[in-house]
Image (cartoon, rainbow, N blue to C red; front, top):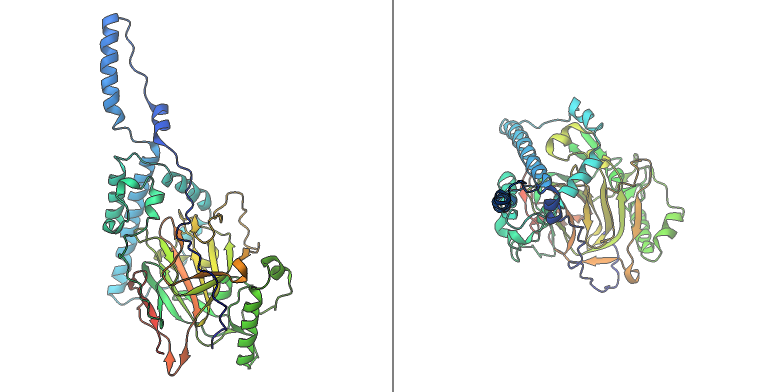
Length: 443
């Protein structure tokens, strides 16, 4: 089953679009904290003291470390210690062949009491501070040692990344990633760890978070998503397929507000089932991973939805203790079609990662302090329609960036016929790099 393709729209180069945040300069900070020179009431002593004071002051300035940098170093140490603790527990369980199950704990409930959105904005301000040139290599190498980042892949010398934020979202040297351009292959959009994958089946199209905890694809992507579903009791799948295709086609011919005001087909997502051949894959990006998101295939993006939400951690411990974690958290969902039908991608925010930068829409702001946290509020939705065609991306084109590690959830249709059946070529817990094959099918 394939959707009818659109006429080829002009290919837009969004790789050059990148929003630069305001920088805070250390020169102003140093002037504020600079101690006053010592005074002397004796003439000669005053001159000597002034001379010695200026020398010691000039020497002292080189060792001044601003509070923002100290906070950064402290945060790096805390994150590293926590990561080592979690990694050891997970490795012990895996070595014993134990799959950890969902089990809420007191710490998970305590997280709900913390102002994680405000903390994330504060961390964003800290990482946006411009570091002195001499200090940059030391900070970035310390980060790389703590989180196993490969600095040899950085496109620029370390001294040219003015802040931690720029360093987190750095580009790679050309040739650092090999993209599998096989037309019968779906490529990984990110560097990360494959947490879960499989085919969506049964009522609600449930995605497994961990053993004993699931969430529905519709709750993740939005109630108004174009997720191909069959209503309960509807046996004519071909008719449903045609209706879904017509709905998506009409979306490209109307403005987004007309679609929102139209009377959509109301579906009971709990009892509806996904069409055959609908798959999902969840990939977790650690803090030390490459943080940019790329297109997994030739993809025509039609709709963007921004869900305001919490900013809980998304590490493996959090997935075992916070129910419906990815549905709870703030996220940006992109939805459209590729050569095999439907495709959607959810970029999920996390603690200290309130900012999700969308290169194809640089005006989008996430973790907005003026936005109230109301889960009942519908997501902000925008229909992309340059010349009525959406945004066309080629496999490997840049889409977005996280400021630290986070999670990407991919939902897509793929062939399921006996002669051309899609199959994943990854394993759960396996490391994968951007551009490598997630799954393949034959011609």
